[in-house]
Amino acid sequence: FYFSSVAFYTSNLLVDYTIQLYVILFILFSLAGLGPGKLSALGSTFSTEWIVSMGLVTLVPQLCELVLEYGAVHAVRQTIGGLLSATFFFIFQNKNIAESMKEGAKTGLAKYFFTGRPSANQHQTW
Image (cartoon, rainbow, N blue to C red; front, top):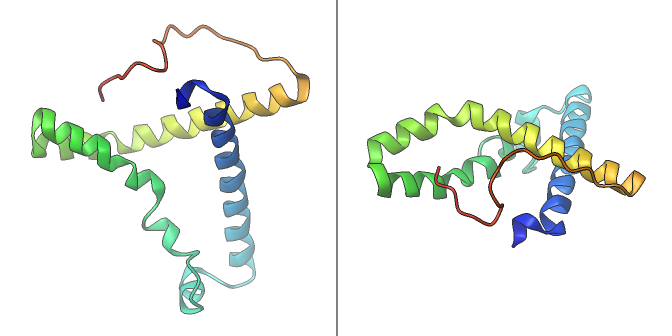
């Protein structure tokens, strides 16, 4: 029931805040002359986030399910082929949820727009 409770929406709001903070810090470090190369030389883990991010790690369950259902070649092709579109989808989804949480906290009202999607607790295949 995580996806239909307050924790999911709060988690998306916190992800939105931390991404904004991350980008601001990255820009400030770049303006200060500390690029990813210098940060890694200083022993900072700030530069490794670009290589192994949670988005890439969360592809593993989807890839495993596709391998079991369709085979390895089809799974890799479909996963890599949908990477860009999935990235844009989840960016917009996260921003929508975060903005709705902010608006709900400000006004005390929660607007509902019927989208025709099924219940959040049903498993949908990839």
